[in-house]
Length: 181
Image 1 (cartoon, rainbow, N blue to C red):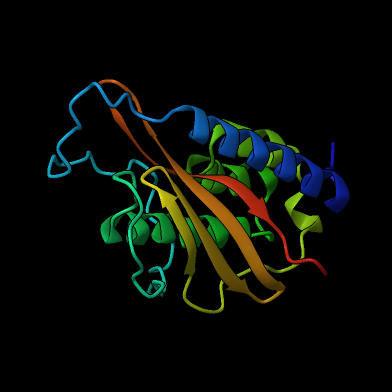
Image 2: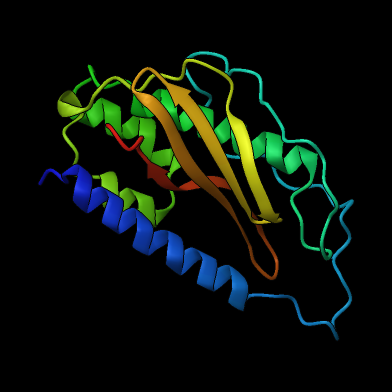
């Protein structure tokens, strides 16, 4: 099954809306003590990209609102994963099994469901051509990243699962192609 651009955009919008709703519904309980922000998080388990990631362009620091914000290190980590995911995504000349094995470790299950049945041979070139840019970091678990590519700028939402006793790696939740892709 090949997902056309309209279907992919619709699924991406639905998934993004669901994520934003879920993020809004998972605010910490004020009666509980806040977790220490100095605790070391486990390293991401996603495989290293074939080429070194491009430098990350961070937005001008603004005023933080509330206590749930992405640190600069979180933003850098999320942007690195976004660039690595786009590098894997753009390897469209590989056979499907190799292409999917390179891309899928960077994706959340929701993004995997959208892109799993894509024929990479039908994809337009989307290799990163510049540094990823953080466009928003509204919480400690969601960072929006724009990645410039040969086919235009892709918008990725990168999320991190934080459970009661575990912190997951950053993973791509949505890959939104350029409007003229």
